[in-house]
Image 1: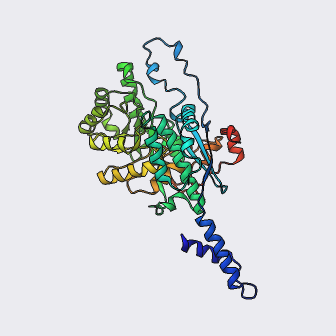
Image 2: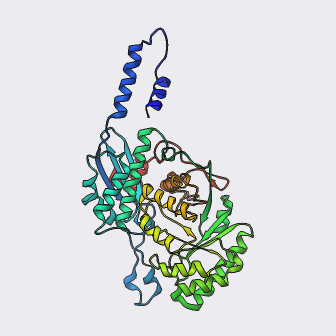
Image 3: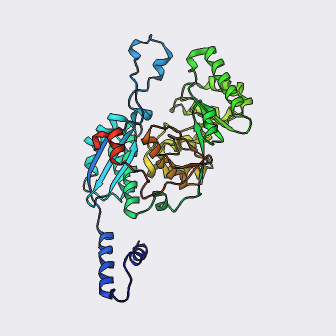
Length: 412
């Protein structure tokens, strides 16, 4: 730190023999040193729902008792409908922003519990803060909404650390492991994904196993048709969003073997470790990916210990933030299991990918979604199907007044 400050001092001070004296120079160095050693202090913590996408009322009360849609009513606290923005401010004017999940429930936990553990502390003690938040919520948390809340806090702290150092966060982690990360497009408009330059496509929105044989035939047709549309060389994946059971997945994987899927994502509910282990043993036509809805190193260790995923998919805004996801990456590297983070092309997810050798691709997040300034701002530059490292200090996300007014007006 001292050497970097010293170099910065020489570059900033007007070094002219006629006007520069040793005393003036040393006074400047001393001032910089004092600022560097001054302890930062958190003075404000605020969490609000982030209006990434317009949510719709589920309307489940009008559905018949056994309608399959009743098993797909995710509510306002999950997925992008539950996105939150955490803002942490320090006494030296540095502000960090972190994206988390859990909607209003997570915001309530931050405002009424976790905020008390943050005010007055040094935001650069990120590891210690994470452990304190996790331990203090472990009697009612451990995963889900609480970890979504901690994720947003952790990312805001890393944003502060990067801005304090004047560097992108990936530079604080030892520098990027590569100069670009291949991306893959998530969406059923596969032609659009190919037009954007992606050479890997993931399709979704499949029929639930409760829809029986007609649903199975629909799913098989959709996958085989997608393979025909993308061509032989494009990687093709399928995201089931936990809509199937073990027997259903075994049959479907066999029936679409000719499509050569790169992976099937989350076919089962997250807690069905036994089912995932069986799929990993018995499915040979493709790989099984899971972890988007898993949390913390403890949860991912269970997946690794039980050989319950060929590919891990932590979401840095849901699984515990950058601090915990880095530990997950190390565990995956040790077990020789690849990691393809959920929404890996956000500035938060791509920073995680750039810090590890375990990750091979970044999932699209907002790419090509014109009209959504927030998604565009949170997505690094795409060049020939690959994402470039985020630039600027912190995560490089500019939560300016215009963005906040539209997507998080409570913070204006």
